[in-house]
Image (cartoon, rainbow, N blue to C red; front, side):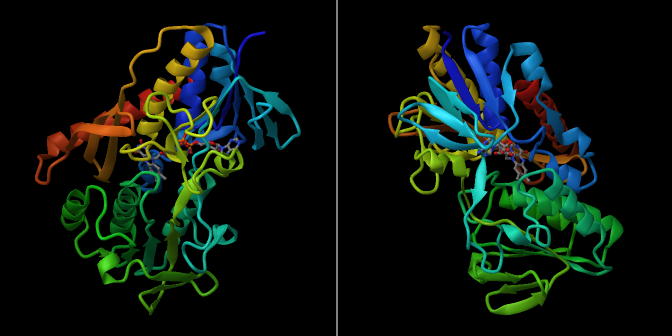
Length: 393
Ligand code: FAD
């Protein structure tokens, strides 16, 4: 029969890799995609949804075209076990799927106990909104329901985590809403880091658009020493208790659990080879996106998509003998600070023996004119259309 590829996770990495393998192999490879959700709500642009600038439908995508256009077998279920000796994947529904090549792109899970007082059972009280969809809707509703002059608190995550500028774009979008609807409200960020991605750009933008609204408490000021009490809606920073109205807890992260169950992680992330994204533990298993540990690329949708294209080319080459091109990787992370005030940071990367290594980069500058910032925002709109087409159409 045909060679079989099983992809676990229909997100930025998994959607892209399934589509490229199926599309470019023209039916020569049997591709199955396992994804529990019928609708993928992208984390990218979910902050803009929270800011009221996108609807929930605009960030929701379905899998029908992958089946219709490329014959991908899309199964809506959870992968619950991987047998790397017999080379098969077991689904929650009991089905066992054999593979020649297995590609894991399950995203992230949270590290238990990383924020004392918080666990997944309280995510409806203190949402993370770091997986998009109902969590994003909940957080947005909580912001809308804040009392006049109330407090929005964020517990920011330690490195490395999904989307380095994500928490700070979120703060910008929350500030955008509160400035208009609840101008005496306050935003507090407890951060276990001494600095963060695009910090100068965010701080400058916050001072310009939202003066006096945002209080960032970094590691040097006790921001790393936090606990929460969801019943009392209290946040404790460096021993000081504070009553809060919204508490957005973004815990420390690790690879999605199935990577751990497959036995390809180092306890937190899955180390991969830079040439083709294959696991350092098993040449027939590949790990993409947030779950892998590859070197210098940030954990982003752009990165996952870029890694998926390299992986698709390599997997296809090894199964059908098609030409394998030298790997090339790139990333850009855009963030919106206020309406039409977009900034970006990005880089290109190369595969070295040891890791995916940064070659060259760029970052927006403080003091750029408004037209350039608007153009930067428009680039992000174009990128969003392009990556979601790459994943789903
Ligand atoms: P995901 O896209 O999360 O896909 C993982 C999929 O695997 C999920 O659909 C999940 O349901 C599925 N899955 C998990 N476990 C199993 C299992 N056992 N069986 C079957 N399926 C499973 N990135 C950017 O590039 N640009 C941005 O502007 C940007 N903004 C962001 C803003 C926020 C607020 C956040 C949180 C993230 C943002 N990101 C952004 C980061 C981006 O969302 C992630 O880096 C990207 O989605 C990673 O892709 P992935 O394939 O690793 O995981």
